[in-house]
Structure formats: structure tokens, C-alpha cells
Amino acid sequence: MSISDFSGKTIAIDFETATEARASACSIGLAFIENGRVVRIEERLIRPPDNRYSPFNIAIHGIRPEHTAHAPDFADVMAEFAGEFEGARMIAHNASFDFSVLRACLDLVGLEYPELSYLCSVKLAQRHWPDLGSHRLNVLAAHLGLTFAHHNAAEDARICAEACLAMAVEAEALDCFDLALKLGLNVGRLNRRGYEPCSFARKPRRVASLQA
Image 1 (cartoon, helix red, strand yellow):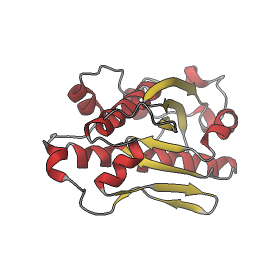
Image 2 (cartoon, one colour; image 1 turned 90 degrees about the horizontal axis):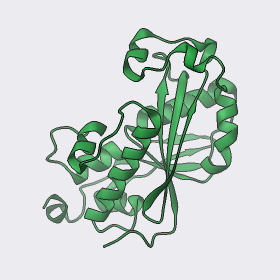
Image 3 (spheres, helix red, strand yellow; image 1 turned 180 degrees about the horizontal axis):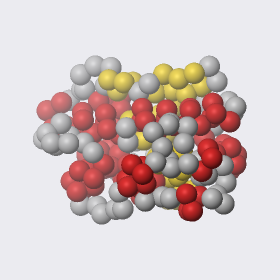
Image 4 (cartoon, helix red, strand yellow; image 1 turned 120 degrees about the horizontal axis):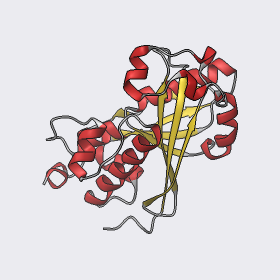
């Protein structure tokens, strides 16, 4: 089954942070899915609070203070994408991290949470590809024969999106959110009052066919 007829929009999101603090986003990557394919990729550098970085985080993603010294702050970047986040359906690889970064950054600058729903692609992959030794993003990319620059926010968002699309096609799901229903995954939600995490709900349906 093809998912190319699905007309909804889903956004894969990835953050890189400057320090151990969740409110220190220094880069955001977005991959927009429409009609069963990635149609747009965006990346923005973000100036973190005081433009402070830890050596550990720099070693992971390679972003340094000089790269973000003149970058917009989180509030300005959020203003650019706020209209697309509101009411969106989103996915992230290890969503508990990325959406905690989003919440922490919004809290820091005093902005309301957007109303959106989201999925964790790690949890989807754990259910759909249970025999993989790991469900890290680079492992999923290798499994699908995809190459990418790991820990680049835009590239990570793209691979997250492509992995979810591949899983949906293999499972004959209408889209990533229909895939979550098949796999017994509760959709996470962010709203003005707080959030509900994406979580396992039950054993997936048709386990044998998904593992074949």
C-alpha cells in the first residue's frame, strides 16, 4: 500500500543543545512531510542563553559560540514557525528529549505552548523493527540504506521523517499516526495546560506480519 494519497502534513523536529540545560537550544531542524514524502527541510541556528556552550555538546554537534553569536534567539525562531507548529502533527526521534527542549525554551522566554500532537520514532521503530540491535537514528539510517550527517538538526529531522515513512509503507498504514495506532502507541500531546507523553499503550496488532 502506498501512503502517497494521504493529504495531511506532519513535521519531524530535532533540536541540538548548547549545554546540559534543556533550555539551551542552539539549532532546530524541521522536515515537512506531505502526501507521503518529505517536501521541505528547514534548519535554523539559535543563540542560546548568554551564547554559552559546553565542550561536551560542541564535540557532539560541532556548533560553537562563534556560529551563533549573531543568530536569532529562540523567541525569534519560534515566531517564524509558530503558525506551522500550532495544530501540527509532529514526530521526533527520542521525542521525550526534543519536546522537553521545546517546552523548556518556551518556558524560559515566557511563551505559551502550541497545541500539537506528536509521536516518538524511537518507540515506533522498537515496535516495528524489534529485531534491530539498536534503534538509534544512525542504525535506522543504515537499515534503510540512507546516509546523513548525524547530529545536524536538519539531517536528523530528515532521517526521522524518512524512517517513519518507510515503517508506514511496510506496515500498510495510511500515515505515521495510523502506524502508531497499529503498533499500540499513545500519541503525545502538547497544549496550553501542559503535555501528555507519547507512550506504549498495548501490544501491537498483527505482530507476525510486522516482523516478517
